[in-house]
Image 1: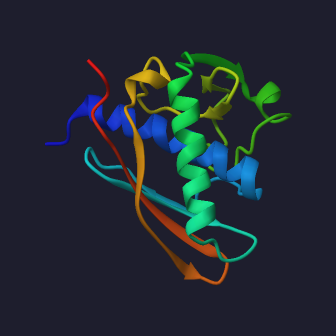
Image 2: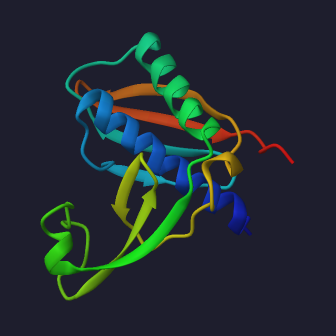
Length: 149
């Protein structure tokens, strides 16, 4: 049985990874995501092949964000308002309002999953491996080390 707290930490890490991929490479939401309590993976459409230098930069930026202890808060937003800011293509059309997960100063995303309360609860983010699944699609496999006690 997966550990719910570990999954919440991973889910938050996925939000950070997606925010960094968007900021660095213009990526939209992940094409595919699998969150596990020990390791996870995300696929992104990228402008071209990424290598070790780009992966090191991604990892470094995520750990910099984690170290800043950003609060993570959730709030409800009417669909009408959300449409002006967010990509709602994965949100059921019949939802009149949705939950927004906000990593203060970093990212806001419609999401119904569980998350950590602060980024410092995540522990160190580590890219375990990556590969180009297609010329413009990268799969990034990552894990989190235990957070400081």
